[in-house]
Every structure is written in C-alpha cells, then in structure tokens.
Image (cartoon, rainbow, N blue to C red; front, side, top):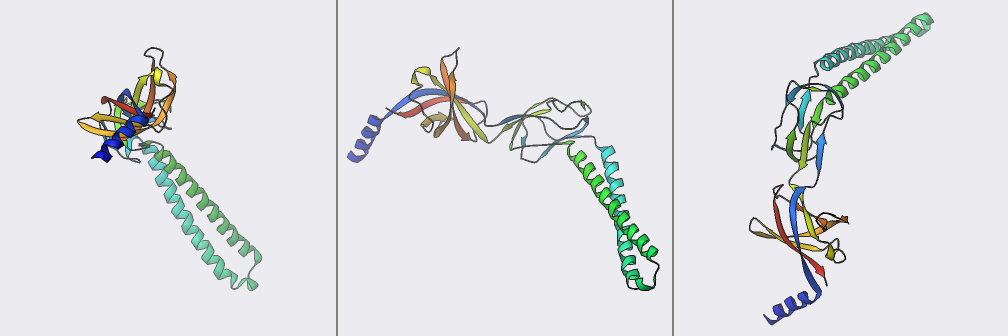
Length: 243
C-alpha cells in the first residue's frame, strides 16, 4: 500500500493534466465519384449502410459495353481457332516442304501471322470493354459507412467531378480534441489522453497537433486515433503532460 501511494505521488510530481473536450469524426472521409458517365442502373447502398473495401456501391448502365465485350470475345475465339489451324497446317507442310512450292509455305505463314494479329487485336478489344465496364462501377476505397447520397436510380452522371456518395471510415475514427491556447507549449505528440465515453474510462495517444490557433475560440486542436466509437459523439477528458 505504501509503495502504491509513493508511486501515485511520484507520478503527480512529474505529470500534469490539461482539460480537453472532443468530437468523434471519421479518420478518412471521401466524396466518391466515377471516371465514367451515364445513367445509374443500380445502387447497392443507402445512408447509414456499412461497407467493406472493394464493395460495389453503385453501377451505371453498361449494356453497350457488354455487347462490345461479347463481340470481342467471339472474335477472340475465332482468331484463336484460326491460329490453331494455321499452326497445325504449317507443321504438316514443313514435313514435306522440300517438295512444295515455296509460295505455299509463305501463304501458310501469312495466315498464321494474320491469325496472331487478329487474336492480339481481339484480346485488346476485350480488355478495353472490361475496363470500360469496370469504370462504371463505383467501389468502396476503404471500410466505412455511407453518410450521404446525391444520386438515384435513373438519374444521369454527367461529369467525373460529380459527387455521388460520401463514405466515412468506420470503425476507424479519431477524437478531435480542443484545448486552451495557453497550453500550446505543454501538449506534445505522444501525450496520453484520458477520457470517458458511454460510462467507460478510456485512453489514447495524441497523434497530431494542428499548427494554428482558432481565431474565434482561441483553441488548439489535436487528434487521437480510436476505434468503434459512433461518429458524432462528443465528450471530454484530460491530456497528461510532463510538468
């Protein structure tokens, strides 16, 4: 008991506490848009929906591109069959080339080369349409929650700069702390922040301190990374600093 009391007294001698309130905000927030344009065909999310990185959130109509992809795949199959036939024919004729007209071998080699080029072109075309179709799908860049939606099914997307959805990271959040400017020289990155939320006592570490003082409130802002706290929550606590 005496050792514990001595430890608490020692900590009090070398540490100080500074009051700081906080608001819970997303670590990352993004206004999502598409590279492509067209009519919205499907929306898979709504405001408040939790999503995972890579989830398809929204799709534009891609029926024209789908037809182009199918046609390219057919051309790729035909070109591949033609190339296989040309290679097989060339192998057979090379076994008896000594008794063949050289022009015949040239013609077979030309057909082989032609089939190779057709196959290459068809593959490139398929890749192009796959890319165009993929560009009409809006995917989540990180785990989070949809916090705003600006488009509905049937409406048009006319510009790559048009915001469609807002995604806020979750469960990764941060506490946006504010404390009095008079403590600007005391608070450092790495200081512990002790706070209470929903009846639970918690701790975090200051990861960032904003360089400017808010001219209206005369407050300085700092960040503490956290998890699984509802965005929009608020509270207060104390920054533990060296005296």
